[in-house]
Length: 422
Ligand code: AMP
Image (tube, rainbow, N blue to C red; front, side, top):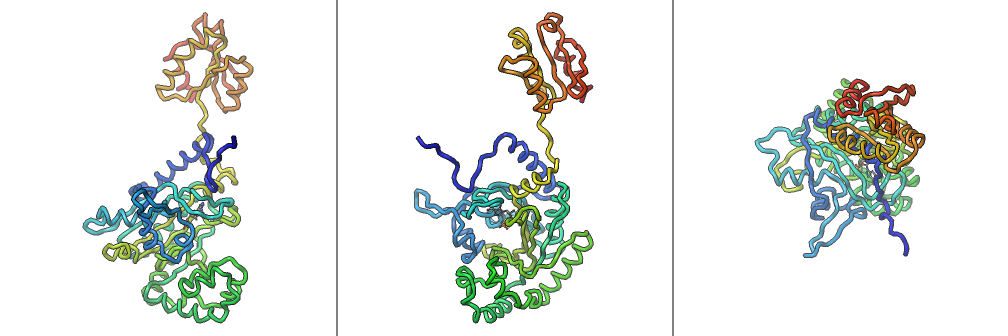
């Protein structure tokens, strides 16, 4: 019978990987808590309408990347392709705005998009993300960007490319939009089929199309930042001053528009050179109209989402040792059946007391057991042969120096020894 394998674009995490993931997850929770964010966990699927309304009907995600299905009552549901729409829904559903003020939320978990899988692009992937609701102040934009960037810096990734742009608001964007359509309409024939379709509905997306003929067509178009209204212009100016004061190095990228309709004013992306084609580690922006579009009172917001798989790819490629080794603190090597029986309760008791202890369950020779301990990176091995057992002793071997010391075969004595060796 043929073997069943994982669905395209998904993967299993095996024990060596999960150890790294858990470690990274701890660091994610830690930085958000330091910046004063509370964690929110929303369902993995939502009513399809939430994403249609929130992300936008003409976006790639809604048009062709959602995993949408009908439940048994024929309601249309969708596996969440991103986190912001769900967070905004929950913010409204639970009245998290309360009596006003700023609400700082973060999430972590799997997202689902039916994209063509490639290196750094999966159909199920994990994101952590921040959402700050309730403030129009550019200091919040700067704080959110600082959080995203500082997390990478903390992990030792300092050579990042931070790209920044402003895509205006419903007051000034339509002006730019019309200008774009006007300039590009005569060039329609030279555009890729995707952009031909998008030209009238979502012309800004043509700016970040990677197709060479579309890039040619948009090469000399005016910059969006030149048509911003006074409010958007001043917001952008203040944000740049704030980023310079941290400092966060960024460069202006007038083609950065991002794939969601909800963005207003600030948009940004953080790229890492070693990721190849899928080089974005994280992206975000301001969404001052989304809450209203989801049925709430006008409430400004800003956030970002960052990919965990891509972050791990960068960390692995740089061999950055940010992960705590899961190495056992002690390996006990019993020789013979009597020693195995004596070691077993000790092993369980030490583990119950929180020590990470390993042992042999194959009845192998001392040489083989030492080899295994060495492979695991263990620095201390307790050897229990017949002689040691008779003398109620255990031989503690320091693997780095091969130095050995005999100590009583007694739980408290072993604990004391482990503590002094730590
Ligand atoms: P987005 O939600 O599209 O703004 O993406 C934010 C970040 O999530 C990206 O910069 C990537 O790090 C990550 N990401 C987005 N889509 C995928 C995917 N299909 N596979 C892996 N990571 C992804």
